[in-house]
Length: 355
Image 1: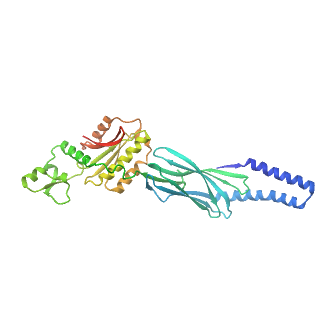
Image 2 (image 1 turned 90 degrees about the vertical axis):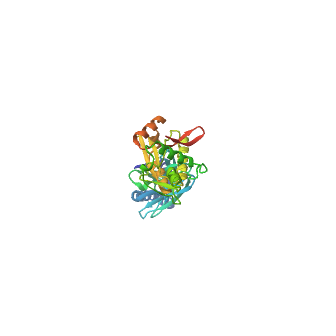
Image 3 (image 1 turned 180 degrees about the vertical axis):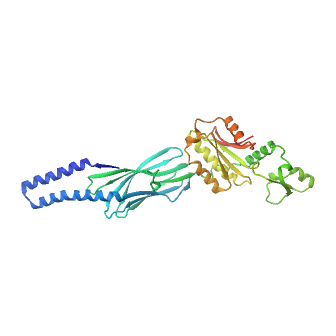
């Protein structure tokens, strides 16, 4: 907290007082002496009431939305609090709008009324990118009514959560939704079953007749041909039938943005398939993967919101070679024989099956 003076206002005020003093010495007017007394008393009252009231002033920032989609409009509420009985002319605040995932921010100066009890100011804004957006109060400045002194205070959002609010901006789920991704499921499952040792009846807990709604890929074709009835395999574990999507982010913000958008749209489309889904995001800071289980749209949204909890730099580090990714996958997930890899090559992101 730091006190300061409006130097030029003090100079102007003293010049005005000196002028009225000279006029009084020349004309001896009681009106002039009365006005001079008022000029002296009012600033003293203004400063005294300010020194009492500023201690009872506070400010908060709130948002009623925690997760929204890229391109949507939102708003934050700046709430000023004045718990004294003395109104003040206003509170000037520096508000920081930033994206902690990509590491950029912009300051905005706002003025909030400080009437008795406080007031509120609604700031609308439009989300223009994906990531974790935060709005925090950086510092405030309060002045007295006469405009002679002020106090400037640095806020500490890391200590007081009311001084900041966070909103997660997710990609539009319709991103590249027209792509036919059924081949990814077929390719991943076929590669998995072909590579797993003994992918026959000994790897399932039960074989039964086909029931409408069963997955086509679970049909036991050899047995079905012998019995003239469609038979399906009931698996004991989903570890061999999960579709695993692996992404690595890039230092280039443009590339990373499209990788995330593409992966979000891809997984959202894959929710229509009858397969378990897992998302693996390479984290360079721990030389490993963050794993997310995707079972529905809510878990998909939460997974990508959680990805934003760490800055992009944690994910990219000094970069990682494709062979290293394959090696890490083999060591950390030895049961996995194939996975869907999202990469950015040429004109944009794409997905392939790696086995």
